[in-house]
Image 1 (spheres, protein in one colour):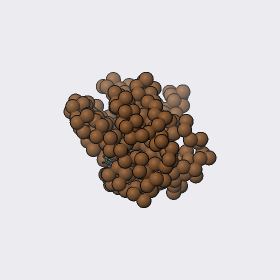
Image 2 (cartoon, protein in one colour; image 1 turned 120 degrees about the vertical axis):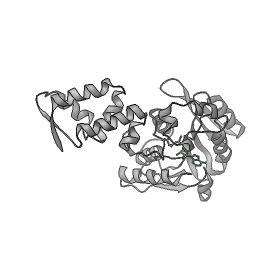
Image 3 (cartoon, protein in one colour; image 1 turned 90 degrees about the vertical axis):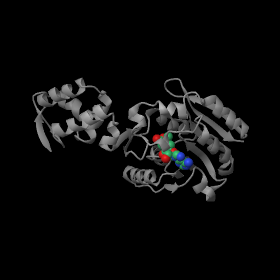
Image 4 (cartoon, protein in one colour; image 1 turned 90 degrees about the horizontal axis):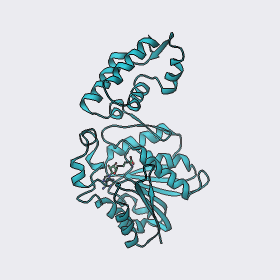
Length: 289
Ligand SMILES: C[S@@+](CC[C@H](N)C(=O)[O-])C[C@H]1O[C@@H](n2cnc3c(N)ncnc32)[C@H](O)[C@@H]1O
């Protein structure tokens, strides 16, 4: 641990933020690399005459901040960590950085199934860092979950994140294309969730460079119209869900109505388009008959 004066630190912090970037990303840097949480910082500021302790020196922190600003690399990849709901998750460029809007998927599940007590069997398709599945495994400790991804590197990270988040063993990871690793669970799932790649090809080409140059294409691109994977997931869902089992999908901002039609075509009922906090129809949910 290095000790520096609060005054020197605050001067340095102001200089870094004046170069660009946002306060939230800077807080991630301070917390994950500097070992200084936002709560620590708020307390320290109350005593500007004192000293504070950092895990790394200011030059090192500044070099990472510069890389973030000048190469547009997401701070989460540079720090190897992201915060999502109440989880602290390891991330590398093999996994999508889980987005704040996706946090609502877990709340949708809470609205359907009573927290804690329910004994569910759930699946997540395309788990990436494992964020959604881990949150559900923790919220429903009597449940069992299975999470798939086509990318074994992503599954290794998800597995590490699960081990780091709890001592539970109610979540298992499987590698393969969407439902295919779950053959032995056909007709047994109470719930399946997916935030699949849904960006249409043309939109993908125009994504900001901090996304396009760093985040995995495999996690973003949803084919020509963005619905390639959603179509496949919906078509096969009836084989895997129990009668009245739920399917919860995240989709692109303008895909809600199309996803709804796909669910209707595949005999789903109780279909609803659920809005995110910006009022966008971000999720489409339904029950199999
Ligand atoms: C949009 S990311 C979602 C990651 C994570 N669930 C989240 O919400 O942050 C989509 C994930 O689907 C995975 N994926 C892409 N194609 C797949 C396929 N054919 N079968 C299974 N998983 C796939 C990607 O590797 C990626 O991890």
